[in-house]
Structures are given as structure tokens and as C-alpha cells.
Length: 595
Image (cartoon, rainbow, N blue to C red; front, top):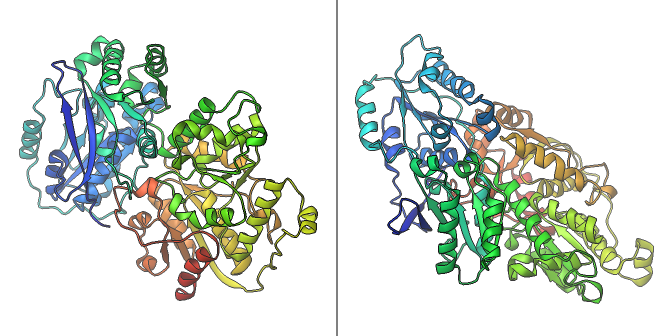
């Protein structure tokens, strides 16, 4: 796995107050060295263990990858409900006991997050509850914005490293941990980079480590965030945040729409982000809150972002909708954001076909944000990732705009797709299209038979198209589609949105039913490795290979990038093609070479 080359530089705007705002700028550099985790990972017999929201854990995971120290990193993601229910301590104890039992390190440093400080985690009680017959040192490093005012964290770490005597042990090799998913606000912030918006994150200040620029971003990453300490949190920070946000928008926004995001600390403190956005808008500073808290996945966040925008910019009735009536703007596309496997460059072949067939295409990412309401006035909306489904079906329910969730792979699926498009654009059934001479003859399924089994990991809309190709044209009888969903809310979201589209795919004319929602969910390395062993071929992001115990996994793996998961961790992927005959040719090269 390559070392991540993305580094973060923060430019402070000094205001003379405890609470300030900062602009985050991402740039590529090979000098990114985060002092605290780097020092811990330099000690070869010590395990860095961490608990907290997705935000903190993902930042530490990236540092472990850079230090080539995944075997000396352990984590557990704690949800906001677990903090509220008081079950976080039990979860941390279980994580630490597993490290003590399986890795036998010379010491463990528990790396705290702001959420543990705010919820007054009792670390003494945690250490007392451990099963540690070997008396392996377990130390707690208090760090982050919530302790910075009264602790010298670097000195504390030096003291801890001195107290843990060098054991001479080598940390036992275990299956490397799977990556934490991108938090919601980072996914949203990255998706927003295509539009001219003023992006503002409510944060205690320590959330920059999880950010990495999307591949191919040609301009500076646009995001401003707040920073405050435990004193501000204790006295109630919402009023101060309101004043700070208003001043910032007056000075910096230049009339642009402010997209307000939130993170774990403001969420746990009860900051009312909806009210803050409303306050700003009432003062003539247009602001929209995009639901986020650092505890949910980027997939969920981007889905809610699309839904918020179409609700805001689409009319209340079909007659009010932009592009309605005689102004239908053709085919709308939803879900082709910067971190999608089906980003604009990967579906350009399909867009070219639509243009050649005489249809106008509306891709929101290529237009000013306010025009996204045109999706409520299209003939139909083509969804290319799961993140686009929720908004598409809201539009369908409110404006009766049909949906097609499909990424066709191979000639047969491509012709089916073009026929479906023609039917929806012309509002004709197949018989009428045949009479008009625009119906394309679809070849029969192949008689080939392939006894191998295939595991597909990634966005369900994409893997659905690949599965149809493998079954219909390559003769595969066993194809499993899998989704990595380590957060329960993420799995719940997938189950809900995928069922929406079960009747709006290309599967109904295939040799067997393949519902969009027919996926297996996994969240642990052991479950992933079980899936790897059960299948002859694997198509998915190679970030999952870190969990594979099978030595020959390289031979049977085709890298299908999932940028929303692996960006900033794996910085280079081999090129891939997913659409139409070119997508089939890309797959065939792998399938034929691995037979």
C-alpha cells in the first residue's frame, strides 16, 4: 500500500479570541509528519489504541498506513448513541483486552479523542476492568482541543514513552484492521468542491487529519472550520459560534451560499446547526445546513446532501419545477460525485451515447448548484451510485419523474440500457418503439459456462451491472455482491435505499433475477477473509487486501477503486473502465488471464 502523499496545512486567521476560524488547504507533499502518532508508531513494541468517532479514527488510520504500522494500531468506532447510553467504556475494554490477548505488545497507549473528554470517560475504571495478567503497561494520552489549554501533550507523551520500558518484544502479527469509512462531513465537503459554495465546518478544531483532496481536484480545497477549547465548550458555545459564523460570512463568503457542516463535538454538545443556518439566512447570509456529525459515513452524508439540495432548489409542485412542462431538460444524472467509482470521467462513454441518440443531459456537478432543481423536470433520472438514490426517489414521488439505476457492462446490457432510455424519453412501450424503428435488438445470453465464483465489492449500482455481465455473458453461476458497512447506520441506510430501486434496474430481462438489494454486508476483517476464501475471483478496491490471509489473493484480485473509502490512503490505482463494451473488455482481460 502506497504512502499517502496528501498533507494538510492550516492557515489561522487570528482574531484575538479563544474561538477562531481556520481555512483548510490540502496540497501534495511528502513531508506530512504528524508528531504524536508518529512518535508512538516509532516504538516497535507499542500498540496505539484509539476509540472515538469516524473522524478521529480515520485520521489515525491514515497515519498508521504512512508509518507502515497497521499491525500496531487498534481501534473501535464508538457511535453517538453508545456514548449517550454509557456503553462506550465496555467497548473500549473489549478492544484493549483483544490487543492484550492477541498481540502481546510491550505496551499500549490509549489515544484519547475529544468525545471521550466531553463524556468524562473514566479511564481508571477502564484499566481496572482489563484482563492483563502479564501486567503489560497501559497508558492514556490525553490530547486534542479539549485538553490543550491545560496539558502539555508532547511532554505527556515523552513521559509515557519513558515509563514504558522497552520490552524487546515484537508485536504479534495479526490480521491488519480494515479502514474506517470516510465521515459524513468529509464526504460532503469533497462533493461540494465542484460548486462555488462557501463551506463551513463546525468543529472543536482537531478534525483536519481525516481530510484528503479528491483525486483530480484542480483547485484549492475550499473549507473553513472553527476551533475552540474546553472552556468554550463548558460555558456553551452556540452563541459564540453564531457570532463567529456571521462575521466570517460577512467577510469571506462574498454572497455565496454557505454550506454548514457539523462534527462530533458540536453534535455531542447539542449545538443546533439547523437553527444556526436559519439565523444566518434571516440576516441575509444564505446558509443551508447539510446534516452531518462525524458519526455517520460519507455515503450517508452525500446522499443527504443531494436530497437537501433537490428539496431546496426544486419547486413545490411539478408546474413549479425548473425545466417542467415543455422545458424538460432530457436525462438527469444523480450520484456522479468526485468520490464516486462512477465519477463523471467514468460514465462519459454513456453520456456520449445519450448525446448521439439526440438526448440532452443534465449533470448537476457541471452546472451552478442552484440549477440542481432541474432534476425535477427531466424525462427521467439516471442514478449511477447509491448516494444518488434517495434524492432520485424523492423526486419520483413528488414529481413523477422515473428512475433508472443502472451501469450497463457489455454490449447486451448496453443495448438494454439504450432501449430503456428511449422508452422513457419518448414515453413509448417496446412495441411502439419497434414500429418507430428506434428499438435495438438485444442478443441472447451467452451459452458459455464458467464454474468459477466471483466476489464483487463496491457500490451496489456498479456491482449490479458487473454481476449481470458475469452471469449473462460469461456464464458465471455464483456471483456474490458485497458491501463494506462497518457502521450500523450505514448498513441500515444501504438496506433502505437499495430496496427503493429494485424495480428500476436492467435485471428484469436477464437470465435470472438480480435485485439491487441482493448484497452481503460485512464489517470485520475475519468476515472479509472468509468471503475471500469462498470465491475464486475478487473484484473490489485493493484496500481490502490488507485483511487477506490467503497468500494467493493477489493473483485472483482485480482492483476496482472505491474512492469514497480509499482516497487519501491509496493514492494511486490502476485505471479502470466500467461502462458498456469497454467495461466488458476491461473485465475480460482479467477474467481470461486468471483462468
